[in-house]
Image 1: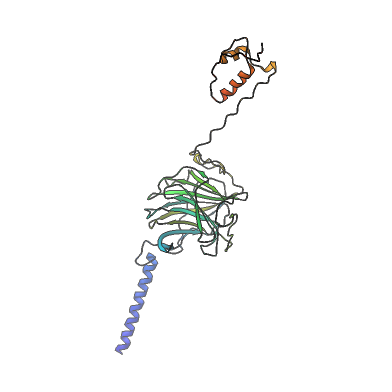
Image 2: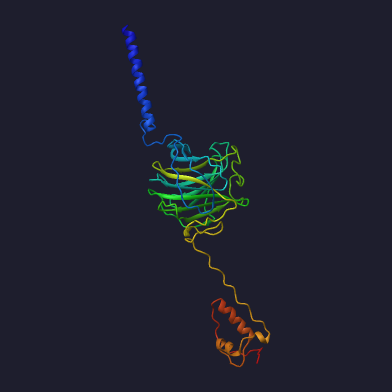
Amino acid sequence: MAHDDLLGDLLLFGIVIGGLIFTLKYLFGKVGDASSSSSGSTEGTVTGTLVYKGTGQTNGNFKDWGRQTANIGGKATPSRRWDSDAQYLNCAVIFKMNIGKAKKADNVDVKFRGGSHKDTNGGWYGIGVLFNGDASFVKEYPHPTTKPYSADDKGTSLGSIESKDIALQCIMYNDGSTPVMEVWGNAEGKTDSWTFIGRKKDIGNMSPGPILTQIGMKGEKKQSIQIRVDNCPDAKMLGATAYELVTPIVKDSGASSSSTSSSTTSSTTSKSPTPTPTPPKPFSPSPANMPTPLAGAAHINVNPNYYSYEKLLEYQYAEARKTTIKPKQIRFSNLVK
């Protein structure tokens, strides 16, 4: 009888302890690691001004992958990731983040067009910034073969992004049959104005793999858009939303003045090229179109009753080039009186 009572007490004790452990896991995610995010938790959405016009379709379903580390190069490395099931081919992702203090130099980016990250799947374009605020682009095909690239068109760096709230707008679209990647940002974490950081195009000069014009070109025929940052154990996601863009790409009329870029021009924060001046049309040698002798003489310092058409034509182009013709004491072989 005493033996039965002891078994009953042990069973009751086990039930109580089991219930307590279940309650702690429910309330705090992982016992002993209250800072960990529970697998599958959905982050908050964020609204912002699009650089390019959207269709009105959005997806804010970015889920934490539920882990704090990943095996990178054979080592357990801090790695935070958030995935969305949005199936937009032409897409902009706006998100806000604070990466905290980095353990080493790395980048934060958004991966587009590939499926879940398995060795049988590919490929992805990664668009984001290095921790120093410069544009960062990668291509992965298949998983995990990845190669980094710098921008074709460089804009303005955000500067160091460590330990502060920032906002990024990472854009993936096709310009005809050419995939184009752009990254815009705001160093103050605002989403209503953007600074152009960089642009990259895959015209067949980005390895590994083929030009990725479609979703899921290897393995799964679907897309898992992933925001990822490594080597930042204290990184915090402050909200993310994927936006579908209209095709072909159109500048959003609601975009702020700092985002005045098309697919071929950068923002007003970038320097515009100086246009090449067009030389004035040369005079026709007919007498009716020839300049007056007095006007010619005033410039080249010759007898006001004579002038050389060749010297005036030379002067005309010299003016366009902002150079100076030095007066010369010469005898003209071809004078017009």
